Image (cartoon, rainbow, N blue to C red; front, side, top):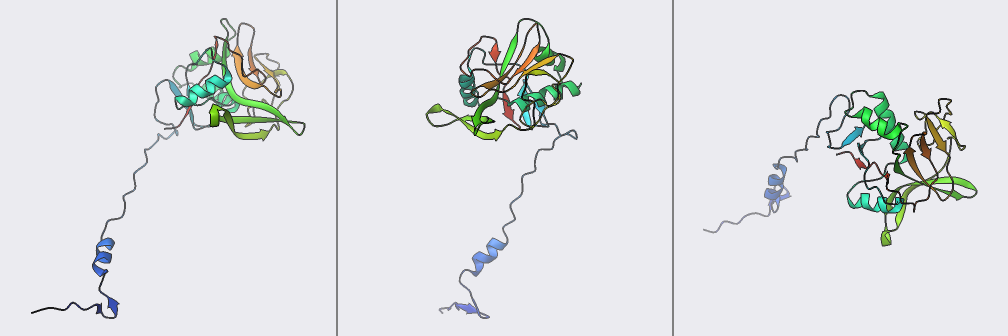
Length: 232
């Protein structure tokens, strides 16, 4: 006996009904639970780096890539999945070390950055200054582009910071890494931005200096970079 399956049931098509039922019983996708951070908002430890919550970045404890110019340093960092810190990120790192006494190796790192002694130590920072319509601008977040040429991810007109050479309070700065306050303590000197220049930080037996002017093509054995990498 042949049984004929009807095409309609209670006014609705039977074809495809079983597929719809089966689909409705598929359990919903289970969301992956995010890794929990500790109550202080710290990220997982990363060997050789310190996590700075204010900038959501890891900053290296030691300098690397000495003996390369600013352009070469950028290219090599990005080849390794790293980046050059901007002046703002670098100053946030220093401020974090100065205000958090439980950070491992903080004293040695701060001495390496700020202490007045020989030999001199220096590190590149990701900021290039240029003029536009007669005003100073800053380019940063550089990435290698076509033909390995560096391209800035962001460009901003300089606003709100000191634009004259002076001793500064290194803990007072804006989001462009420009110092805001002069200081009579004569601990850190500041050379204000000059068009066509890049930024770096140096310390020697005389003083520590935030330079916002330097040639990107200079190569010095003691001039390296304190690499940064995104939070993992």
